[in-house]
Image (cartoon, rainbow, N blue to C red):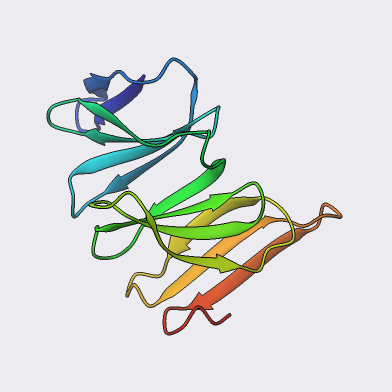
Length: 142
């Protein structure tokens, strides 16, 4: 379950029910008015924050995502997975439209710069060292 809080009153505004597995990552899309979440199985869900309805976007059978974020347009979901690949998913097609390969281990964080032109991804390499990659939005350059 995901709690949406009213910060002014320090009270739960709405509770969103979804998968049986515990939720590990939550990200809000300001443009879409939805929440995306990854559960402990690596499946990705999308919630309509007003209606509270959850939709399975990506099943664990197809991917094992560990980090997520939204593109600046709100039309693309960016995920980082356990194999070190960053994927850009189209909301309308639910298909990978672009991917970046450069990490040597699992990705734990993906975040766009405020202007939407640069993507930073973080994770841990095969030897347990922190790894931070910064990507230009031009052609997947880092």
